[in-house]
Image 1 (spheres, helix red, strand yellow):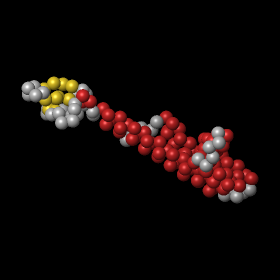
Image 2 (tube, one colour):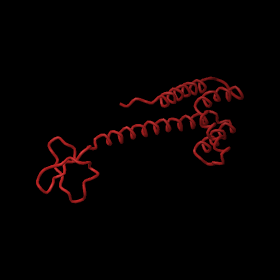
Image 3 (cartoon, rainbow, N blue to C red):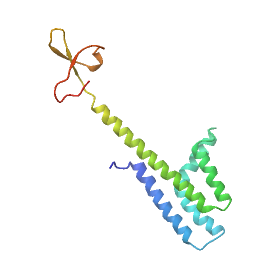
Length: 154
């Protein structure tokens, strides 16, 4: 299994912390402003970056990006006293982002590994029957190349 990057580990830690605090807030017998404050803590832990990016996008005239839409949805849930829903939505969004970052990183590593298997030379067969090592990019269409046992095909 591939290791998580530092950024991904930090996001995972924030997700776990916010999820734990969300469960704690659900179990506490509080209501009103105290309940809002109890849910605001995990919301800000998990969603601060999204809110900051949404405000930055508004400032730069880039409305309706994913951060703006998440901010609107979750702030709207807070405004209608659906505190747990706001935290859940932000939490699930950030879990999706974590999976996305992990998958992109894994894809980059796979592509880099594929680039490493490309051969550095090709054995070009000359009209005399001898072979000459050349750069694979110098081989013309229709030319005959010789692939020896264990070599990669250029």
